[in-house]
Image (cartoon, rainbow, N blue to C red):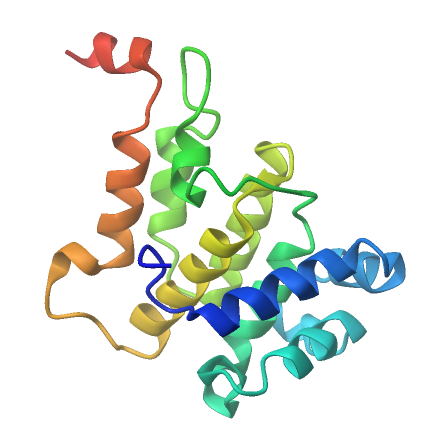
Length: 182
């Protein structure tokens, strides 16, 4: 659990239980997938199912509900949980080139609104074949929200989401790509 900065063990259990349940409630999953913004997510059964599982979490507080809505909408696009890699590591994977280009990854890092982040993450998840680490993806959305929207930045810049994403992405690029840069 130490990798996750915004999720505790109870949050992780609740998120995985909820996400696994989406496979059995195709209507709720489809409804979430059709949303275009986090605001649309509030009007779905899938969001309310997640909210009910997270009521003890800080993420179920009124001020954090937009972030929780983004998590629900983005995770509805994930069909396979890859617990072995972080979200950013998955973006860097590929044979000779990262699956997600540096340009697209940089655009994700420059997201300044929750709507931008939501749209970019969903596109990237689709590009990754809908296979990512559910917990890492959720934690990254919450971490981004905490820093960018709520303004709760860690004094140690090494703990910022942009630094964490950059380190995970560039340290896990395909070897051929690293060799070409040298």
